[in-house]
Length: 363
Image 1: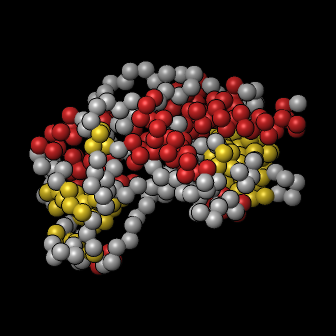
Image 2 (image 1 turned 45 degrees about the vertical axis):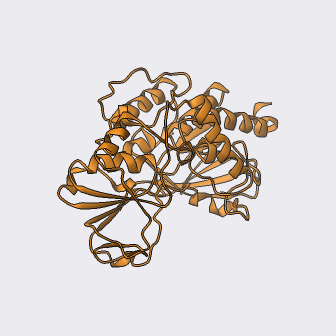
Image 3 (image 1 turned 90 degrees about the vertical axis):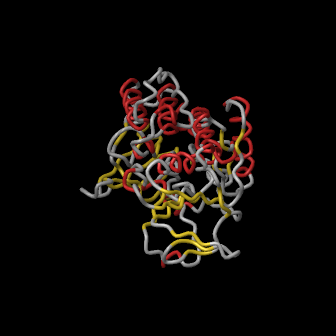
């Protein structure tokens, strides 16, 4: 087992992690000895690396510039995953951020001396564990690695294919099939639109979808959504989705789907059968595929040894700081789990880290 000693470990190098790395750099923490970023992917881009290849840049919900280096004006027809990966790579290089990848963090544990052991291993399984010892931790692991699969009676009986948004690679594989798309968020609408061009689709949601007319403004609508999620995490409840709070935007693409009849929605089914789904009123729908566009949960299993969860099931937060453990900052969690809040969270987390470490490190 190898070991390394630093002041701050940042887990994750997506938008929130890179933002935190930038502000650590600005605050004077030295790369490698002062701070490191541990990232589970084999290249830059965070969760964007895994988005489906048919998602073009002009179809994304919104990407904020990272601090200190604008994205610019990419070709809107380019694959979004490529645009963001190139931008993040340029960002890491511009500021000399010490990103180690691919590294999978398995656990974060207390030490008798008050520091933290961050136990990591190569994400591809080669080599042994490395333990990074840190005085403070900024967790920026996001949600993409924790897809949420709801459970319905009969789910195990379905003879077709079931997959999640995280598994989606494009519409071509569904050509000529009947796809049951479950979920009321932006991704569900995007995938429904793509698949409907090559297959028959049925859209199912728990609640009637609400489409907001008018332009989405990050200042007005974005801040209001962040405030609602922040209220939950301050109370120790599991955070909802910021994007879920903002609602669906009635774009030209959405209007086209509506005119084609793609957005005719059914309420949630009651159970799944071998051939499809059944409703309490006797309605049945046969399907070849069930696509669960049912969101994600925070990827925090590696923090379980620290016992941070409140009785309400979430982690009680004050801004980015974990109330139960001031050594821990969460960015990309709750109100900062989107491009709306990630940059502000990175700045706030580093401010909290400096305040916590000042007697020992800053002087």
